[in-house]
Length: 286
Length: 335
Image (cartoon, rainbow over all chains, first blue to last red; front, side):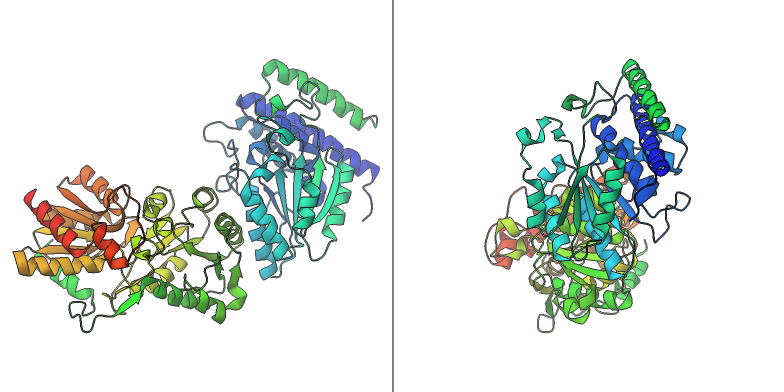
């Protein structure tokens, strides 16, 4: 694949920044929700909606679209924000997050917002559904692909391993799993709560092709997905190393931001930092 | 409801000669599922059969042989069974997923709730080996809580057919009805009381016998026991029972339940399930709200099953004809 042009890369990085700003505004408006994981996956979701996915925001039910599943539904704000900036709905709708009557439920519901593909929140279930979709595509000889974004901690769920085994059995090379490897979960470090390492070897032993990348580098993520798409006969996993709370100084690396939103003052500070970063990106100094 | 109308309704059921022990056929309800599934798969190539390592005993084997391209084996992984099927359904497939009812939906309840029901996907659960009549396998394999687990979930259709022929009909019916569904059937041979001419419609309870004293509302293979008990009560005590085959637990046929209660003034429910939160409990909810009458419940009374001969277990746990007759007599006294 040709690497991203400088202009394209700048646009994607600016998109990721705007997605982060949308996350902060939505979470502050909601008064509850998950900050750290939402912010650290902004680059990945900006890359998906801005570069990787075959999709059409005006036709969310397009049969031949790629399917992007968010297994760890609690980081819904990043998906909603990325969708808004991709044109699925007005950016201002992000302020309805978690409020009565909204399409932007605290955890995503497909029936209320079909473009989210699945209803998620209970952890460990996304890959299993992605396996079903990828198998369906194979049965019908369809070209579209399935991407499943997972948290690292949900690899503690048994069902995820059932899904890994099944994907290996059916050689689902149209399926790519992305792991948000931020090493945090509600109760602390993943390696203290229930160690996941050696995660890459675990995937390999389940007959997956393994890639690792900096999940906060848009260019690197886009490039690694291109490599994953070229794999034949095996599902692929991209272990995306991320910094929880990425982009907001007082949240970065602090697991206590896993499950809480910024208050109004904290949000203002976050938006100030993010806007300054956006200006640096656009000026070519970011 | 006028008696003549009711008699006509009973005649329209075109039941088998279940009263004649010499001619009554005994076929496991799971066989009806196997036959219905093959037919559903031939009618619609989007129908898939997915099994969790129980292809023979859930009777998916015929489908596997006849339609191998529509068959998927995923091993002993019941949560996967549900969630993967939800994924397949969301891209246009109609997956039937089979295991023992104890494991699916017993083990997979949250996946059923989230990925099938809340997600409104067109997945059909085939719960095999339900009830204590599984027999020698014992309590671990005897699902007697599954109706409760499924009927509490919004969007879910829950069907417990009364015999092998009706299980085949129900299998075809749920295949054609969009939405998540639970179909429950049993392991052992049981009496075939319906015929190919017996009508079947999801959500439409059936009056199999008419009488003005006590309404016996039953589901599953115990419908036969209810019919036998009703015949014996008529002969021995002169008690006239209405027997309702209440095969659809959800959405339940409220008008039919209310009509039976109005006609008889007292009700006995019969199910191979815990009496708590099962079919009888739903009947009680309907009657308590709209037409309170005395109710007796035949079913398992807050206990687990155990190993044994199926008939022996049905008797031991109070679901044989003697227990039904006793419940009818009690219900009659309470009128």
